[in-house]
Length: 335
Image 1 (cartoon, rainbow, N blue to C red):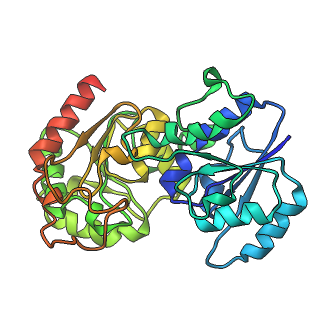
Image 2 (tube, rainbow, N blue to C red):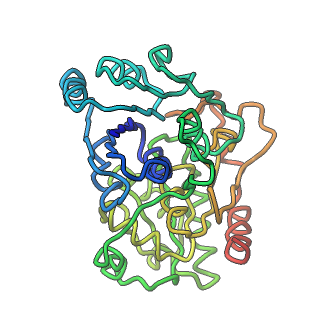
């Protein structure tokens, strides 16, 4: 049996889809599983034992028509799409795959042969994706895998040592986010860094090159920034995985690093602003969420915005460094 999964959403979404891949292989151990992902899929899914074939698709530079032709030529038996885009729906339809499973809220969902309800009701994204398998004739709940999988090679396991880090002896902070309003304030992060250093913690910052400017703002609000190890923009994705795996704890906005930490069982404090936990992207295990409840403006969108729609950004500005520090201490003791 040949199965293909379409997941060309964001980095965090792909990480949260790895339990779906593992569950498919548990239900159909002799199946051939292909996955369609964005270019970062090469790093995210490297060494993943559940995937037989990775198809990289960059919609900005690659032809959808060519992709459809390629998929069609492979004669897949089943297609599953946790991604709710119009492109996924019509591409899998035009590829003439006989069994096509997707969400009822997907664009062009009428092109799926079987549809599963998609609701933002507090169900975690991992469990929501796994519901797509419930319509399979051989579905068995006991065979479901529920934790993200980001396997490292023996060499990759120790990448963190390249940066003179010691296992479980540093707290990570990932201050960046693709969406500006999902970032906690630079003042908040800067003060938190000082508070952590004053309590004797080693602080390490991580992020992509896109996060460098914001990180510079953060460090201007820290009086002890000379004691911070700033690795923002200095690591690749596989190195980041190793650094997160061996951290004592991660502090992050509602973003991909949270799900990396979950994959490795690293405790995580997740700072929420414009988004809410009902969307289903909260830490699946060993985590605490810091948020301001009761604001009428929350949520203002599924992903946040470039600027606060009402100009206050109080969902983040009202979160104090003390609130985050308390959650860190609680998580270290109890997560």
